[in-house]
Length: 322
Image (tube, rainbow, N blue to C red):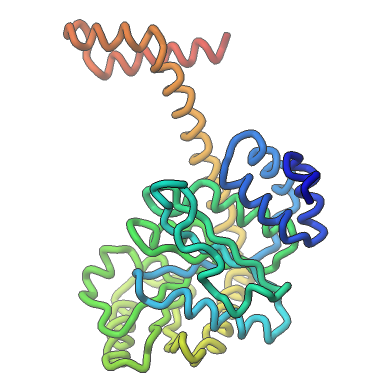
């Protein structure tokens, strides 16, 4: 594999043959971004579109990792292969994922039918970097039929994951707190399936009743999110969860919503890439002589900030045309 270390095409070819080291290097290139990541994205785009993506989100401490591990055991018992992307906080020193894939799901690291990868948020506000949807696409193109994305569960990531997944599983615990706060967080709107994990604890039935009441007061479409009771440490309820994920997939396919969701996802990614590209060009332009001149005029109050930005954007457009 050493001869493939600097050749994205060779790495991709080896990954398609099932080489784990090549897959790891491929994911690293995607995370790093740049020309290599763009090339990999281009080569894998047309070959993707078959995998079903499941987002697993919820507050820190809700037991998402333990639940994901138990669910993976159920999935593997059916003979299905699956990949897991664990979106972790970024290290302030290296920029990499803090928790690491070996800390998670240790029972499955030697299973050839499971691929586990930790991805760093890299300071992205919602926790999902631009690399995450591309990593999902790469795994899809490599033939993984199920891709699970587990979020770190902070900031706006609970809502953001809904835009990157076909099925969104929201994990809560008994006594999860003020239902109004939950509504503010947007969890009611993004959940396709609710999971009350650690359901052996007191208050589980009350939490289920609260969720059911909120669902009855919400505007629900053709799919009513089921509420699944689980105990991640023992695996209790995970078979029911897997069944509900399958039911939701069938619903999306029959109703045509799967196609609509993926079309919206493509639009969202396009807009994100477009904004990033414009931002990079504007930053490059703003570091030049024109920017210095605009700053001087601003300080002298010869122009206002809106006019300064307009001049900068006009200059960007002119440089694009030329």
